[in-house]
Image (tube, rainbow, N blue to C red; front, side, top):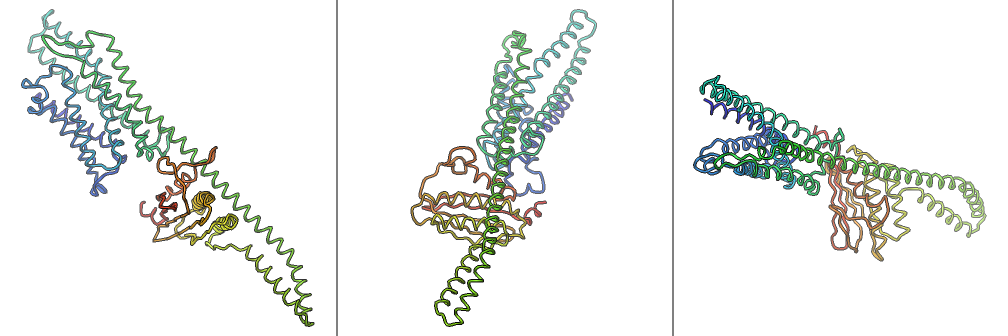
Length: 504
């Protein structure tokens, strides 16, 4: 009966811990199998794996014989490392089967979970040993020295004490673990800022995941070291905390410090990423302000030209009337002058018009600006872009993409001595918009992560592609950069409102 009760207690504890493990990984890593879309089977399988492995190594006779020998009795604390290692390996194997994506991220999360679990146990360990030791000494005194209770009574009382003590330790450890896992995941999702941040997305990168893996691994190694030296049994039990009483304070403090380090690492990295995002947003707003300023300047230029044309038109009309009168009197040269005047007026009117009509004045101005720049620098420029009004994409987001993409393309073409060109291609299919900017390129690139680094020095440079990415991510899109032979390709895919509605 006693063994059955303890097995039920272990089953409840392992089930709760397995649920916490599944909670930590749920939503943080992409599930591999399609059947998880409507049912949380991945989380259920992960939880079951944890429970089965834990029960097997702690309750199965054959497993205990392998770990502890024929007597199935732990003679030193070093042997307790094996069940923990088996559980970690089982969880890693299940994780690699059930989840896909960044393996370092998966390893970091699982290591953090087991590190916190082990450190919590060692935080309570000296207190637990002291408390159960004190209770045992008290009842030993009643049994042997005072002789106020029989041996049967002693066994019954110690059985109840053991049951209550184990229950309290398990409940305390599980509650503390729940608080730590909940806080850890909150920092992952919100970056320690109290609001949804981008650290969760950056955590997909190996660098950030690796930075969180190191403190988790440190905590786990510290716990393994404690398990290897805590006690051993020869003729009598040797317990390190009995031999060195100061460890009753040092071990909990170091365990707590390791736990704090694990939690603070994810919080600090999250706050750093939040600050990076603020800087990216500031650069994005500056880019939009610059685009607006360029738009205003272009419109002012057009307005000035219109006013100038209006002012000159009176003189043109007066001169044409005089020339027409001369033509009526038979002056042949007057006819040639009239044609010259008309051609001049037509040329001036064409300069006021935008070559590319994109169905939006803001994008008309942007393309008009780069048409003039192409003429000045001798760059062949072509475009078939039409503003996709029905997709509901903010024109300022498109302006950021077009301005930064075309600016980079023209800067690259300035280094080309001949056959410099920039092509802007736009294709719309359903609720998807695909933009491709292609330009001539014969140099070399240095890459920083997924994007080439800027060759310009000083502040304000190197944010073009990052600004484009910030806009693209608002529409669940993608950005791709490729260099093929003597051409540079920037491809941007955007998803319109229909795609957002499908997700809700």
